[in-house]
Length: 168
Image 1 (cartoon, rainbow, N blue to C red):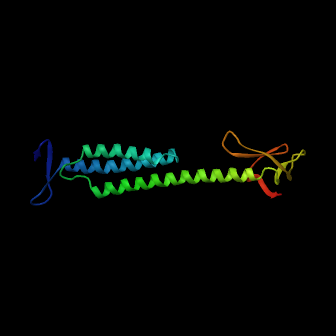
Image 2: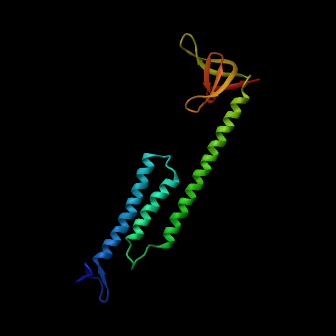
Image 3: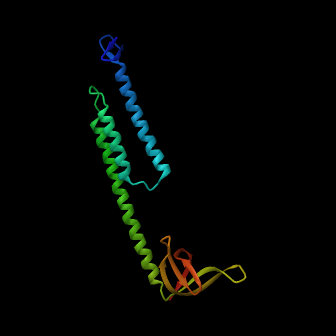
């Protein structure tokens, strides 16, 4: 039976389900599948994608879904609110992560500056090409091009992780 360009299929004695309803349910399933696939692809391509970018993509998909939804079966408000709350939590975690990264960078720079004028031990390559424990006084601290903290000890340039021991 046809009704408003949709084919109605009998499902029970008293009710009918239209092919449009089926198409709408399929659209919902495809929407969720596409959203999950997009998140998977974004995670694999860029671990540094910001939560706000993901949320903007989600909002675009949500608007499209709302525009094409079946008026007889509207979207679940609780599900939408739950998903938006999860994005909010993700943004807060991202913000905390950035704050911790800045605090760690400040602590590392403070530690490196405290090494100025102190004797440090580290592994360095000798003139014969072998590795040996060497020591010297930290003369300079700076950030290199990649943003790593470097120490100048005599003729050697080393990172904070290369320091084995510190003496006054």
